[in-house]
Image (cartoon, rainbow, N blue to C red; front, top):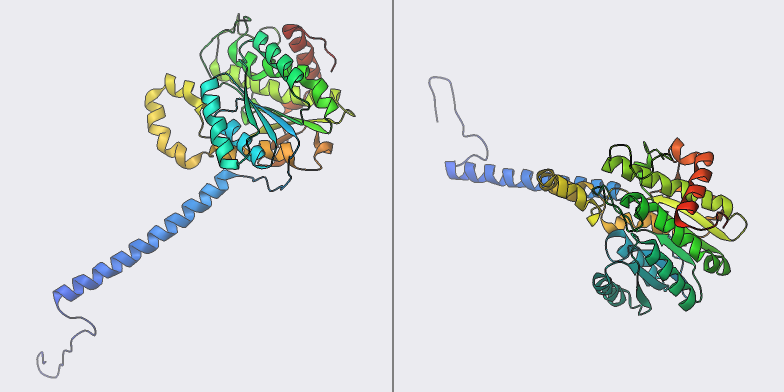
Length: 348
């Protein structure tokens, strides 16, 4: 082909008809799209793994041992029970809603092959219920190797329990304080044994207002109340370890992470539009209940943690609690005040 004197124009190599060019471009776009998709999947998987945090890698068995978990019918409580049952423990699931608890227990029995999973009723909004539960447990169980204080409420409206206590402080702290103290004889006779108390990073910025624990005179803030109760968990766990030194009973406090559970239902109830908008990002950026249970499991089963009694854990590692959570004077004062409120002697 010629294009004027002295010029020769040749076809561009590999270029055919318009249809062939279009097909080549389409194939290139498909390959680029597939590559981009693969990169996004890899990045998402890496991000999910990072969000998942630490993993309990101990293979410790719990055959012949008894474990009690509060708030065990859903969320990280249920997943904690599932894994401990898989390791052979006798599981006692302490729950308020027995119908949901039985469904959860049956699921755990089937998935683990461990039929030694039982449910017991306790309402942590009632000190009478806690006392009744503890008495039944002491009368019916031979031992208690691990107590996981897992149940809790978050940022609920200002409700009062039947004992007249603000609900978040009562359920998250006072009832677990009472339950642990009532079960100490069984924990001591089963030593070495452990108490694992689930707190939260929200203890940072918390403050124990000893002059108004129940927001009777100051304006009620669901967030500040929650932070106060989670700080109380940290201080209780620390003081419990101090008082039980040399007894064979260890005490650990854990932050499970930010998890997709029912715990945030009160926040979504107050801000439904925000809850709907954040639901998809939450699915991507929060831990699953199984991932959230890992630090509780780590503290429950990992050998050699006795020297870390009183410590605060997150992502299966010791972390430094906030300064407010390391205040031994406040921890002692909280213990004494809690004992007075629930009507027990101070000493363990």
